[in-house]
Figure 1 (cartoon, rainbow, N blue to C red):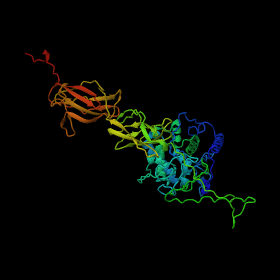
Figure 2 (tube, rainbow, N blue to C red):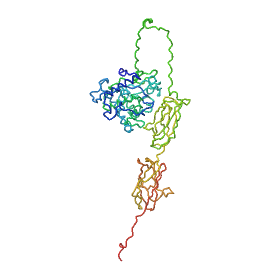
Figure 3 (cartoon, helix red, strand yellow):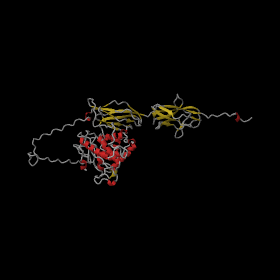
Length: 581
């Protein structure tokens, strides 16, 4: 297996050139246009101009496997599955536990975020590119990888520079971050995106159920609809901000959509090539100065090759080559230049306006935070984490309570829009710098109760009743706020003494409670999804006259309705009806 993972492409121009040639060859061998499912292939689908992702990503833009899917459509027949050791010809076989995790994640997202339209094949495509389906399905019965899967340390040496954010908790590296697990999350992203997909009470990035569900939620954030190509592009680019990565994932997505089948765990095919140059890119690399994660076994490095002796080179006694010049004391390695994150001294508000929204509505203002140096200079390309704290059901759009955003060229990070929950009151959103211990910045947002500013009856039938009878028509009203339907608005209905005296009357029409007792005030009423409120039946006692029913809502909307209780009119007998003399 080590040999299979060891063959890698050179990064940079070589990687781009090889990938371009491979993609071109694949494109030429397949029919142009759309595939069997009516979707464009990656080569034919030109992403929208605005699909650019932020500098932040799920993987920290770590290396990935660049193997392309076979030219032939997948054959789902188990008879053509991989042989022992995972070296079969077909690439469509997905290890049983891994495939189950993808499908369960799709089912979960279908229920919690139906508008996302996440296909499990997208998780399979990313899982293939990131880890070769958890190294060919080398997982235990609970879905945890037999050995931790780690990307290279992100030390800026050919990769992104991300200093440690988890004190080595996930990756065993207290100096730099490394992508972790079968879906290759970096620790700072897993801290907020992690999920418990197998209901064991833990969020483990090395568990395929947890990682697949987390990847699904990550791809579905920001209210993206993955059935739309432009939004699918954005989601994939947010996972790893590379156009080559987008094209490759789309290739595998199209491939798995045409057919995939289950193979036993541990027998999946393993990819050969990666997008990096191989420096520290072993699936479970050892990191100088870092403690290996539990269960991992450091692999011995390659043996140094003997150098050929040059003619005339003096020999040491007992063999070896004597130095031609006196040994010199090695100089200290150059210090690593500070990252943008290292230069951040504090966070400042970047003009965030007052944050207020009614329960259930989206806030129309967004939080803006600027990262600055001690001298007040803006710092770009710094990851700012926004966290909703406290007991509240307010979330960011997409249902998350944490979001990480990279600062732009002006040093400003703009949080996703907030959506108010049903709990009213003050909500705190805390902004912090990922990987930098500087004081956080708290923002206050206010959630008010749902309100209406207008009420109107839905009908105009007269509301009349004979003494001791029942009103034939029930009162129904519609609530609106600024002309829009006002749903879920609290309301009160009261039978009052007069227009000038809103106290409860003790005679005239009345409602009945569940026990049949007379009630002249109804509380706890709410408009429905269409803003409608239909009151219970009204009854009349023996008092005749005109009475008033007043309905009020949160937000100040008021409607007064007239009720009439009158005896039925009796007609006078005609002369012809009088008895004869």
